[in-house]
Length: 340
Ligand SMILES: *[C@@H]1O[C@H](CO)[C@@H](O)[C@H](O)[C@H]1NC(C)=O
Ligand SMILES: *[C@@H]1O[C@H](CO)[C@@H](O)[C@H](O)[C@H]1NC(C)=O
Image (tube, rainbow, N blue to C red; front, side, top):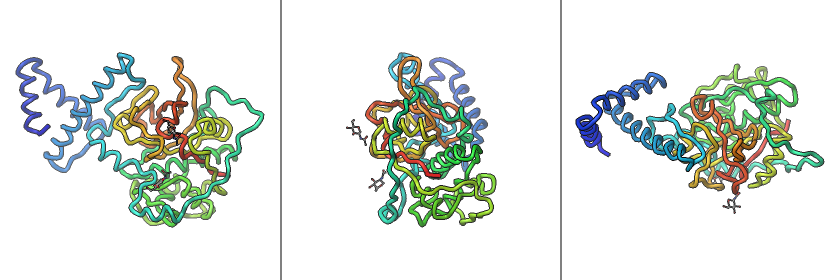
């Protein structure tokens, strides 16, 4: 819809019914801008953003009406990404296995240790590693395709906690700035296994406090004295097996996974058990952290997943994703964790 037709449409609606409709939308838009500290370079840009906001708002309302009818299992909400087109958003945020230099990936094919299924144990029906104190606060990657670094620090934070009893937040910026040689490409994308290899060879990763996040590529400033944890390699969970992933999450700790997050429904997820008919279980574009699993009161199996898009997205930064349905969105396709 062009700008002119939007204005025309609004004028029509205003003339024919609720006098305050336009005011209402403007009010909502102003609230959104204040709430999320939005600043635009020009009034043209702002009009463009407002148009996207209104279209997203409409799509979300439509989806939520279907939720009320029981046709879909999750709700959407306008969050801080409400003024972005979907492809813009995915391009900015989804940096798993995406780089300008594809050759890097072939050069650095990481080789993980073998996952051995735990024997003689009965897995619980529900796991949430947050209850054990193994998960740091939800972080925010900002406008940088560094999801892979947050996924990697998340599982190492968990393993380090299980080893030492101390939960230490680790530096994503350290990985962004220093692991290019291992096949990562900072804000342009990367993979968790490359990060684990870097940390092993480097002999450590700095703490978040000593090497804070910048959301942009910068010089490598790793300082051994500020190291917060290290690893001695990593384990790949067998590709595509939700049973093996369940075993790993239950008995090891939070696990790094890659998923297909390339859908509008993911951008605006708010609550419920996420199921996206368009989801692929092979084309993965986003690195996240599985911190548990369970089953809802109405019988839907889910994975409990920590994202790195701040706490205003999803359930305080978390999402429940469908479990035991053909490896939905590829959650079990590329799962791994560091050895400590
Ligand atoms: C990463 O990308 C390469 C090249 O596009 C592809 O061949 C490979 O299968 C991808 N790996 C994963 C784990 O998605
Ligand atoms: C993806 O799902 C299909 C069924 O829809 C299944 O046959 C296939 O094995 C799955 N692939 C992976 C990698 O899990």
